[in-house]
Amino acid sequence: MKKIFGAAVVVLIVEVLARAALGLGDPPLYIADPRVEYMAAPGTYHRFGKLSAYNSFSMRSREVSAKKTDPDELRVLVIGDSVVNAGVQTDQSEVATTLLEERLRAHRPAFVGNVAAGSWGPPNMLAYVQRFGFFDADVVVIVLNSGDEADVPTFDVVDRHPDYPSVKPLLALEELVGRYGMRYMRGAFTKAGPPAAISPADREAALGALRELIRAAKPRHVIVAQHLGVSELGGHEEPGYFSIKSLAASEAARVVTLPLQPPHYRDGIHTNAAGQKVIADALTEEITKALGLAPLTATRTQ
Image (cartoon, rainbow, N blue to C red; front, side, top):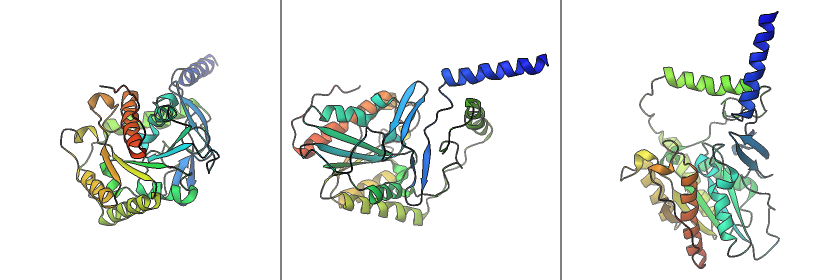
């Protein structure tokens, strides 16, 4: 009996620590969608001491109406994947779109929509705007990486992949063991193989969706911002970078490469808070140029 009681006490202590110290037990939740594939469930989540908040349109942004109520309001949609979403490791206040909105509001009332979810590709992005529209945006920014050249939905993600649950776990320990423990074990005992060959059909579908997305976004200002992985810095861009750049240019979108450097990353592809600030700086500059606004003073992160 004492052993059972002792084990229960240990479990309780670990559960409390997992919730209080690690922020487990409250993951962002996801909704499966027959067209978009999946979107963040509206709500507020606290994890690793960071806040993630999603509005009723699954944007990681404050609440917004589908149409402008103030004709002077400047609206920007930033569409992308986990780089735009910024992840649970980044607080809402540190996300590039939050910083961008604060800067644009120095000119006039502004809203910046963060339309993004981890591992979204061009077909997901296109399906989102086909469902919800562009929210009367004046500028549409599409943030892409080289892998988006052939990134297509599988419609087998929510509740099948540990990063995309639709319900909260009963215990934080479920996440500690089932999500992070198993991931560590898989990484420790699984050797990475060569990258899978790109399917021509997937490439055609992804680039076709990107072309359609750019065309649908017009006559708004359209900016395609390319995000490099760490391994691509210094002139080592992957073929997808050039495919996306060429397509966007052929559609008369403004194409820029985000000026990120190794200190701005927290892993091989995702940015830290300093990287999010660099993205906000770069997009502030591009948007003010596109709209003919006076340059805003922004302290760049070195």
